[in-house]
Image 1 (cartoon, rainbow, N blue to C red):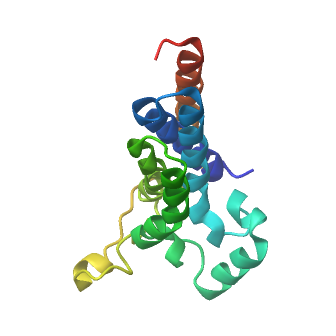
Image 2: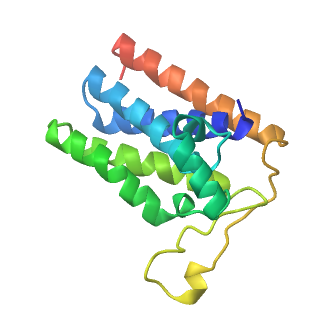
Length: 175
């Protein structure tokens, strides 16, 4: 399993757990937020056949990679995060969950873009939005080399640990 997928999953689960604590109310709401945050955090990598999402949706992944390449496909944009979050948001809305829990899907997807923006490859999150040319072509990138930075392990560990701690507190009734 690739390090980047682990990092996205850990941070996504933690993001969802935080939203679950803040907005989920009961235990099922907390765990729903945690799971949705994790799943939506790994989904933008469906454009990479070796990723967790790419292995599940293999045909789609191969098409996206061949057509655009990893991180140049529409899946690494704010528009995709919004559109991919809609089914989760609608399902949560129809089940009558706490209103704030509706944010877990967009937050999970956004965590993916934020993490990728810290790598050397970077992302162009505004590419398909009706904004000025300057914003559409803006690449956000950092110094981290995907799969080779010890910082990735630290971020992944922090995400999983934070999720475990929040889960323990929630199960014990402390939050």
